[in-house]
Image (tube, rainbow, N blue to C red; front, side, top):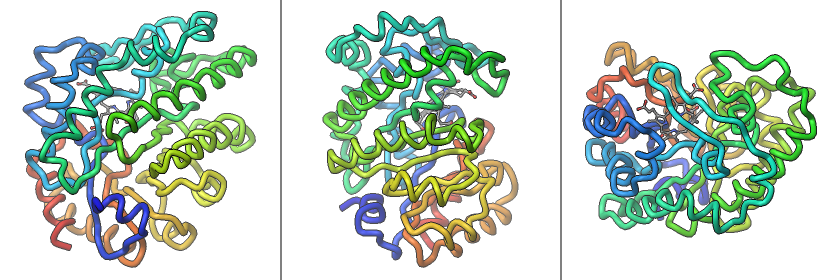
Length: 333
Ligand code: 1CP
């Protein structure tokens, strides 16, 4: 069994597998090389050959325990026929969501539209580099996707004033997301994904009174579905205030923590396997500091099932040498 599944399923505390969010990305010169010639990011995600090459790039350099498929959470609204583009120095820019069109969309048409993603998973999974390692598939959580679909750009720029005004539209989009996220999860598993991570990057924007409706209920539905297919799920509700309550209700196979939470409190309160936590900015400092912080997380979770990762994606300005140092340190711990 791969080390990551060994932690997720057997709750092994003796090993510390490692993978890194955004491990395939802009901090790698070989990624920037491909990206330079492929200015259309959506097209790049739909190029199965290049997507599989990019996915494997970090595994060629570092002794990571998993490949996370090179794609994007916004490929789901794209599959629902919402226009999605990634603008340089701006981020994602979406078109209007056509509810009627999405309501009548068939599983077959959706799957066909984003089929290269599944082919890329298949290619990655067959690669000898993946021996004894896990292929991780992923989706955006319904709430985070809803944010992008209605806001049509990153909420870090601005969230539209009347976001919650159209209650009927929101309810319908959540229903559509539940249906197609399950299809997307199933398709990824069929193509070889052995673990699914659910990214709720904007979970921190929700007030506690709205938590059940927008985060807990819709996420639970996806987690139960994935577990019914015998595939472990890792949830990353970034910025959420009460991780303990979240875990008790959702019961994922592991919880990925962000860098603002206190790892000691998490270890005391949470019984399930934990992933991540360290601030990605630590990789921009010195080796001594990186060593100190990495050791801190490994020490805290020494007797707890733990997958090493960061508390958010690796930053584009990271020196690959620091990544190398980090991976080696975790392996030698
Ligand atoms: O070259 C570039 O400019 C592209 C940068 C980039 C990359 C490398 C984007 C645009 N997406 C990705 C790949 C990606 N996105 C992966 C690949 C696998 C890996 O981790 O190596 C994954 C898992 C994602 C998931 C994703 N996309 C999330 C959830 C995780 C997170 O970072 O919080 C989110 C919020 C997105 C939206 C998105 N896609 C890209 C950007 C710049 C953003 C964020 C925009 C924003 O700040 O709102």
